[in-house]
Image (cartoon, rainbow, N blue to C red; front, side, top):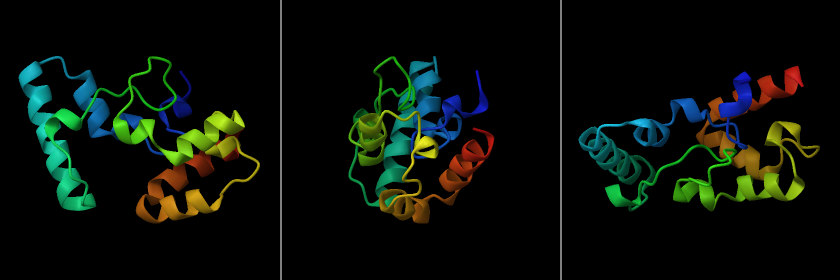
Length: 121
């Protein structure tokens, strides 16, 4: 597996995602606590109303399993990458578009990941 295979289309690191950690957790009690904490974090830090039940399994937006967090499933950046048939935004001829520039304001680490991928492809 190459380093960038767990980087979302937008540049988010799926390995660092608490939703991914909850997906991988085998203990159902721990998984439930993690999902409760994720929902609380979303409410407090992003103003997104969600409950623990809203935190679905997710294998990353580029995974072939079909298990996606609802936010990933409706992501405009992901949809754009799929329409353009690019592995990630790092491979897009329009990099970094306005959608990405706006996104990078909230997550500068995503830009760093995409810039690294662009430097090695």
